[in-house]
Image (cartoon, rainbow, N blue to C red; front, side):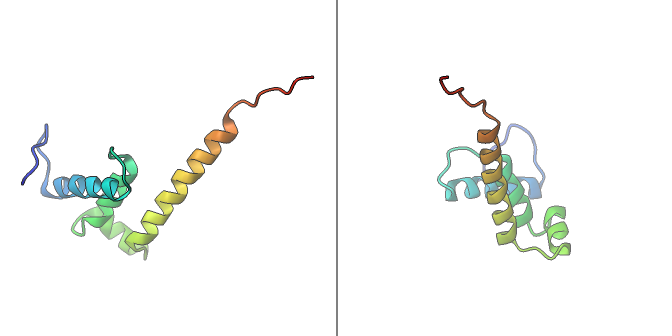
Length: 89
């Protein structure tokens, strides 16, 4: 069944959005985030993102790993930036 989008998408863009949804579901998430769209863009073999990643000598699993590390680092750094409670004197 073909999805209906609120705007017209190119064939590659539509494929990427469907793959992004697949990536989010595979991670047991109920939302599609930028990280899922990034991975999906790389998965669309006829797209410029896939060509750029291939020229860098990377594989899709390396992209997934980099995204996972980035998410972990983001959460770790946001915890560090939270103000610490002062200890009672």
